[in-house]
Length: 114
Length: 109
Image 1 (cartoon, rainbow over the protein chains, first blue to last red):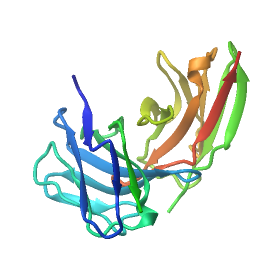
Image 2 (image 1 turned 45 degrees about the vertical axis):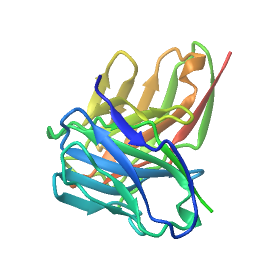
Image 3 (image 1 turned 135 degrees about the horizontal axis):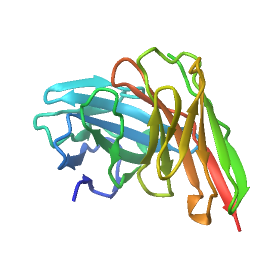
């Protein structure tokens, strides 16, 4: 089954404790992205990757890091989480064919930073 | 950087047609317009995509005028299960994707 998986689905942590949210897709997609969703703000892109070892900032990259060492995986790293990073996070992927922007979203990771 | 604007919310009744409009004044020549649907606590789901004029699939229609500064998602004969948030997405020159604010559609019996 074609899918995007994220782990963990729920995470409660404390300020400053490094964490990683994993994202994996099994569709051989070139493009992957991370979004955060906050009430009243909709979905905002954090980082995106156009292929292995190629990443770029989205709208709200501050406080986040990403890496793309393998095509299928795109982990989101919070080196020193802060309470303002409490949010619902979604990973997404899509194929690279020009003009087609159908993204497949993961189930989401709800992160709480205390 | 251009932004998209949608109504915050809309109400409808089962069986009615619903039209949601998104404005995107600074859309670039090669950009596409895409709409997504999102239910609570789930990731968004692709609905439809278009470049100009009209596109129709089994779920919805998308109308884009010649100047492409706006687009309208049309949902025929909505049901209770269409209650969701609908996002307008315009893809710019790079892969930097920007979602609209979203329109919360509430369908009543």
